Length: 165
Image 1 (cartoon, rainbow, N blue to C red):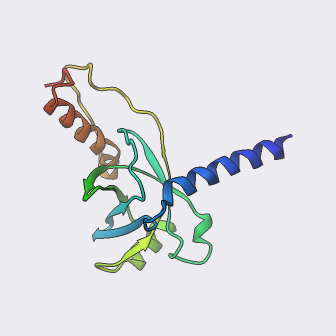
Image 2: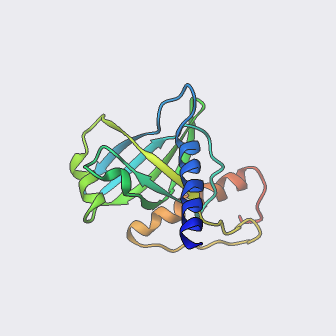
């Protein structure tokens, strides 16, 4: 029974990954990296638009990094998104450490993009629209998880959908 449930769960996840990353007439999602010291901004052009909310994260896989990378999926917070020529581009702010992020930093080349597979978005959003004042605290790379909250709060303020001033 457990093996059956595990198999069904993995099949649903595989279908979701295929749906998120493949679209007829479109390329696979591509990742470009901008690097400044130990910090990387990974910009990923998605195959289709998503309904992203603040506080969500994605699991990232870059198959061309090394042998076996197709089996490695790493979670990162979405720090921002924008629409460029009808394509949705999400940004992930990543700090170089060991393992996957070190390999990613070592393979980095200016003006070079790589195929990136995405699983997500995952997580829930905290609604900030009803608050009059919002204080967000972060240090170091933790700011990446809060940037989308700032972006969406400013968009809500411009559209007069929030009581935050």
